[in-house]
Length: 60
Image (cartoon, rainbow, N blue to C red; front, side, top):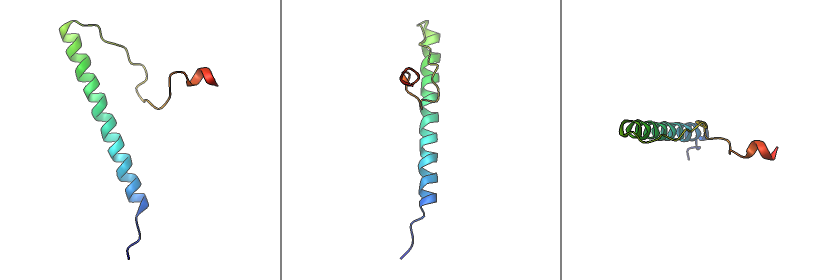
């Protein structure tokens, strides 16, 4: 019986996460560009990496 290749599976999961993150960022950029073209105010998103909660600094 073949042994599972955990490193390969992890790499595939990481690549899928990275692709999903890039697609989400692209959708946000397109929405912001459409809002800007329509003259609507664009919300400012300073947390682009999304790995930390906004109130995490207050808890420490």
